[in-house]
Image (cartoon, rainbow, N blue to C red; front, side, top):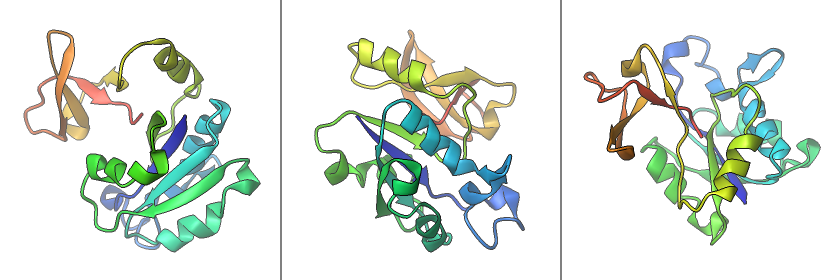
Length: 171
């Protein structure tokens, strides 16, 4: 299994803090928030990781993580350029992924307790894909799942009229 960390996004809601670098490198408890994603993947046994870079100081991300060896992983960088959404970013990993299953992790999220249980549950299932969801009181602030008959039929980013209160958990 391979990991994909989406490290793009402009961080407009965190300005002026994000004028000088990616929001995902902002420290949370003395380490960059994206390091939590990398560590969660590693703790789940995933060490072959692609990092998708955006337009906000991608060189700072590469400088911090390098080839990944100092974190016990192997990192490949893929430039997305201008943001064109999560699906576009994932499509860019096609050659990196090959036929392997992947875990996609948004770099600006921190999940308490890691992701090993989620990965194990996915591996034990027979589904082609899974998306983690969470009930939230303000779904208009998140990507939200539109669910019909217990199936996700579409995902809507920050909808004015949310189809549900089920926010995407970023994995």
